Amino acid sequence: PVGPDGLVIAEGVPLNVSHRHFSHLMAVWPLRTMNFSDADGDLALATRSVDHWAGMKGALTGFCRPAMSQMSAQFGRRAAAISNITFLLSDWIKPNTFYSEGANGPCTETPYAAAYALQAAMLSSWNGTQRVFAGVDDGLLPGAAFYGLRGEGAFLVSARRVSNKTRFVAVLSEAGSGLVVEADMPEPWAAQSNATTPVTLERLHPVGPAMLPRYRVHGL
Image 1 (spheres, one colour):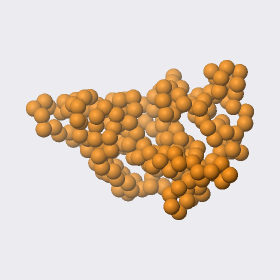
Image 2: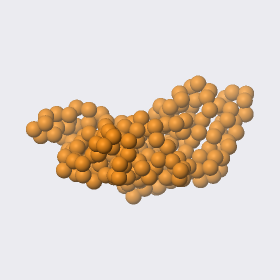
Image 3: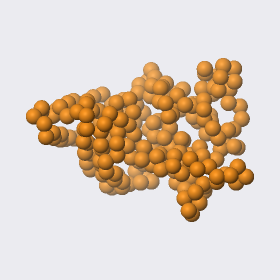
Image 4: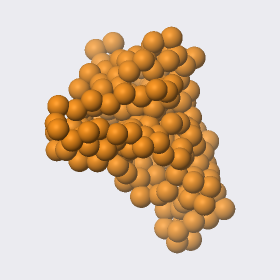
C-alpha cells in the first residue's frame, strides 16, 4: 500500500512518527522486489519512501545507518552510502567495536550490519548483476580494493579502484553461469577463460540511477 509520503505500514496506516525500524521498506531493502532500473519503475516511489523515513529523525539511531547506506547505494547516492557508515562509526560505535543505544541497551546486530554494508558498497549483487563499487563515493573514498567477495550466482569477484578510477575487475565463475557486470571502467574490456568456449562481451544499455556501463559476459 502507498500513501502521499510513499510506502505505508498497512492500508490506511502511514508512518506518522519517527521510528528506527523500517519494516514498511522491506521491498526496497533487503528484499529488493521493486524495480529501480528504468523511468517506468519504482525508483521515485522508493526514494520518496526512504527520504520520508530518514527525514523523521527523532527516534532514529545508529541501528538505521547500515540500512540507509545500502538503500542509498541502490539509488546511486554514493556519498550517502559511505557517510551513513562513517557517521555510525564516529557517533555510535564504541572503541571496542560494540554498539549500544543508551537505556535501550546493546544492539549487537548493528556492527555486523555495518560490516556487511561496507562489503555491499564494494560489491552489490542482486537481480543477476554484479555491481562493482556501487556504494563508493570518489570524494569520500578515492581508493578501495577487495578480493574474492562472493556474488549472487556463484561468482567470486575482485576489484581495485585507485585515484577515483576502477583499474580492474576479475570474476571467477564457479558454476559457469551467465554474468552481467556493472562498473565505471573505461573501455576496452578484456575477458579470458581457461575453457575451450570463447569468451565474448556484449555491451548492454545502462540502467538504473547510476547509468554505469554494463556488459554481459558469454562463455564462462
